[in-house]
Amino acid sequence: MAARLRAFAAFWYDFVVGDDWLVAVGVVASLFLTYELSRTSVPAWWLLPLVLALLLPFSLWRGARKR
Amino acid sequence: MGSGALFIAVFLACAVEAVEATTIVLAAGTARDWRSATIGMAGALAVLAIVVAALGPAVSDVPLRGLRLVVGALLLVFGLQWLRKAILRASGHKALHDEDKIFAEQLAAATSQVRRRAGLVPDWYGFTLSFKGVLLEGLEVVFIVLTFGANQHDIGLAAIAAACAVAVIATAGVAVRSPLSRVPENTMKFVVGIMLTAFGTFWGAEGAGAHWPGSDTSLLALIPAIGAFALILVAVMRASVGRPGGQQVAARGAAAGAAAAAGEGS
Image (cartoon, rainbow over all chains, first blue to last red):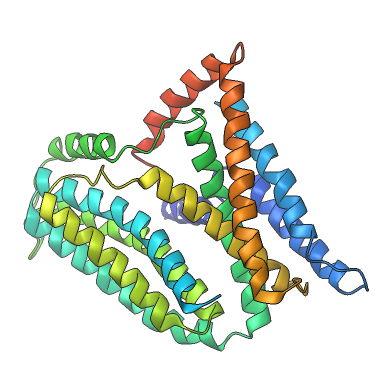
């Protein structure tokens, strides 16, 4: 039973999070920051593309180094 | 986003998943038993239909802003993972997705198993191989249909696009009775990665309370911008393969990629 639960959890982790957990954490954190920024008078739309421009190369660098 | 863009985005994403599911069903049918593989596929499609019927109306009832936040986050994570793999593959840091190779490996694994009858299913292994393959790839199709469809208030059109993609790929698979290696799967994955990332960025930011300049039309800038950025990253990563030590990294990447190819979803 425990092994099946572990396999079930592993499936969903792999399905949602994938190869690099930092990407998922980065996306959630940047959405939270976008929300906080949107409550001020400063435009918030630029934050997510900026995080993406930093996160993707960093994740690629981690991926290439690991292999 | 217009209806045409919704249709194209869903069609491409679902076609990629359908190619992978078709390869698994073909391997199960060829190596084991076509009847069991077909029953497995039909069983998985029935489960997926129940999931869509159960979740479709529920997803439609979620307030748009909350839906866009959750869907945007998931699409962005999915899109970045797809794009990451596609860039690593295109730059030589990871082996290309090879349906011929995957088909051969699954064929070899399936042939080595003992045949066992279970109820109406002549071969249980062929059934489960086909059922699991279609169910797992199909779950991604369901996710894409529900998220794109619900965000655009047109789950029906998204479902039609997915059905068209599955029908086209399945027909091609049945016609050739071999893996669909001529489908430019790696290129399609690159494009789908860009689209998922762009839509995820757009909806995620909107769901979090941001307002895009130009509203929906900002997607017309976002998609090519992410595409151009991804191509630049491919060029930079490719250059790093040429540097001292880079070849070793690339060779290790190719070997690791080839080993992982069979078990990999997208």
